[in-house]
Length: 236
View (tube, rainbow, N blue to C red):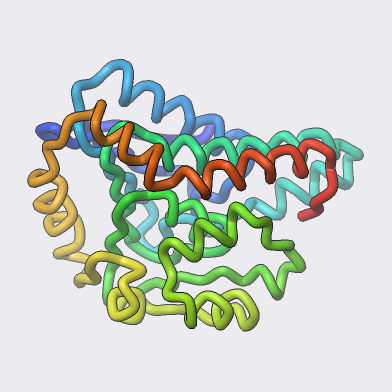
């Protein structure tokens, strides 16, 4: 199971991903979903902060070594389960009854960049790290739910640029385009994030209801995407 640590700071649940460069595979998706359940059911936290234990990487996206090893072993079913589980993780975050904050202490690549768009707010270090969605270089298709999700965070003119070229954005560029709420030097980042989180003491019930409405179109499209993935029509 992937390594995740939980610490409560006031009404904020701080989850640290400590699985090397935190690539997304079946174990990581399962671990994150289990942690989301734990925070909701076993704490009275009102905000969720997810950061990385790696000094330069939040997450390097899909674990292609794991994917390729599974495919080489003829285990296409595990890869299919991973893709569905990843979609379920996105949907869980989009409807999660706590305000969610992603604290990027470094690179946010590929599937991790997509996942980060499911958080309500994002902050990034300004002195190191890139936000990048290199699907064009990996040969990944963009499903309708993913496109709708990215379009809810990225400016309309910027989305085609990032998708078609795989261009990397620095923290300062992300802040300038409102992809993140702020970009700060690494030594300031978590203090800024936690100060922001401390001012978000909103009730779980109303937050959950609002997210269901705000993200209803994305969720509907992702449900349709899950059907496509279960049929095995999309490859990695």
